[in-house]
Each structure stands twice: as structure tokens, then as C-alpha cells.
Length: 301
Image (cartoon, rainbow, N blue to C red; front, side, top):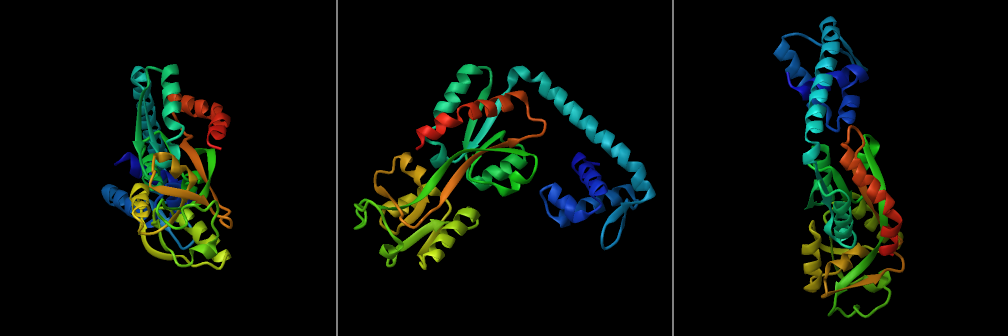
């Protein structure tokens, strides 16, 4: 019996519903059903009585539940003991969006390292989607990403670092490059390169909603999932785009960033970490970031 399967069994027994258990465990119902079915086959017993509204434990299931809880608790205790034994080998892994963190993360990490020189810090450039997966799989301790609704539902602490306005970006050779502001009607004949919807669901939705409110339909020639690739295409004159203002800080001299008069949209950059059983050095970093929040926002104005 695997610990993961026992946790699933305990969750289903507690919530008495496969769908509710799937939401609690950040997965889909078929995965829950498969794990329970595999456990029943392994033990050669039925653990649940199933009906259309809820499930209940069989007599054997009632016997297994307290034992499963004890096994999981002991597993957690052993893990915590090992973590405690590694106090002198603490590590902190941070996932971050390069364009959104370029102006503050290097200094932040440098200052924290001076205060906590024994902590080994690793920083990994990742998309918001990659950070979501890495946090859920405990491959990173801290995430600096765009809003993650799934993480905000439960178990993860969230703190807003700053908000970033969306601007238009064009190549320096574009005929609109010298404009101080742009309006949608000036962009009617332009080709657009936008972020992939599946990688930036909320961002894509808000951009398209703002366009629709202004009776504007962008001529999207293609989508790109990588900010550097997208900006390379813009600088090559293949199209224009809407991007967070912070992108201008990553050294793209071939592009101009121009405010949009009708595009009233700002994007949050949030810090996330697991709020359950976080090691002290992780919460120390979170508290350090919180103490720096006001100066961070001032530096990004």
C-alpha cells in the first residue's frame, strides 16, 4: 500500500464523495476511483459502499481507516524527523518569472543570503504553469508567478508583490514607435502576436475582454508561449503585442513599450508557498519578502 493511496482513501472516507476528494487533492475523479479500485484489488475487499449521492465505508473499510490514519501520521513524523536532522543543510528553491522578477529578485536573494548564509538557495526560471506543477509536486519551495487560482483555494499562502499595467509593444522601426499613447483604433490594421491561451488563461481572457469592450478584434497571426520568443518576433517586425510593463526591464532595446489609453488592466505578481508544514527557513524567507514589500513596490513604480 502506498502512502499516496492511503491519503486518498482517508480523504474519500472523510468527505464521503469521490468528486469532493478529487478537488481536495487537486486531481480528477477518475484518478481517485482508480486508486481506490487498485487498493480494493490489492486487499481483495470492498472498502466503500457506493451510491449516487455519497459513499460510505464498509465494515472492513471502517477497520482500515484508523490504521491508515496512523500509517500516514507516522510517515509524516519520519519525514519531519529527517527534515529536522538536515537543519544544517537547509535549501531553498525558488521558481520565478524572469521578466516579472528581474528588477527585484537578485537583490532580494542577495540580502536574504547575507542574513542566512547557511541556507543554500537555488533559483529556477519557470513559467507560471511550470511553477504550479512544481509547487504541487514539492519541487520548489517558493513561487513568484502570476495569479494561480488553484493554489489560492487551499493550503497555499499568497502575498501580492506588485501590480503591473499591460502595455502595447512594437519594434523600434514601427511607424507607431514614437507615440506616447496608443488607442485601439490605431491598431486596426496591425498583426498581433499574443501569449498562448493555454499558458496564460487569465491574461488571454482579460486582453480579449478589454478588446471586446472597445469593439476591437485583434488580427492574431500566431501565439507564443515564451516571452523572449514573443519579443524577438515583435522586434523583427512580425507583429505587435500586449505585454506586462515589466518586460521592458529585460534589456530589449529593439522594442518600444507604449501605454494603451483604453486598456485598463493590471497584472498581479504573487508569492506562493505551501502553508502546511513549511520548514522555518521557508517561512523566514516569506517574512523577509513581506517586510520588503513596500520598498519593492516603490522600486517598481
